[in-house]
Length: 162
Image 1 (tube, helix red, strand yellow):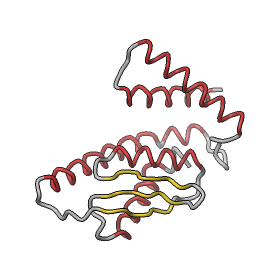
Image 2 (cartoon, one colour; image 1 turned 135 degrees about the vertical axis):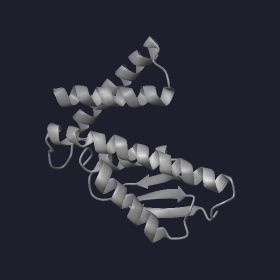
Image 3 (cartoon, helix red, strand yellow; image 1 turned 90 degrees about the vertical axis):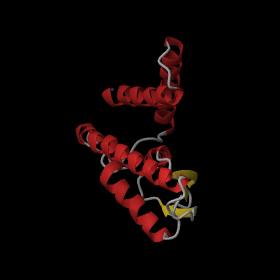
């Protein structure tokens, strides 16, 4: 039961962050939508990890996820600013990044986290092919982009969204 309430709280928080609002009507709408999504995912059997991970272990990874995402955000903002000022290579492009096995919740969370960073835009997540298509500011070395994304996923997200 605690896990369900936690999912509703997290989804509501994301909804309110996107809206940048704490008005009572927005909070109520977020709670209603989050509850519907959690209940629907429970009925369809989706949203549950293939191997249950203890909630304590997942919560222990939240500080690394939040802190690491903030580091990525600052770094991506810096890289974007450097390129906007014309001081860095401007060879943006598309890069396909393989999604590690972990289910649709993990892939969606990764896409949202990567989308926060201004030097990377998620173009598509293809669960069937197990690929995420990204537009990055520096696509000169696609292998380095893939390696950096996988490193970030392993270090920051894997414990929370296995």
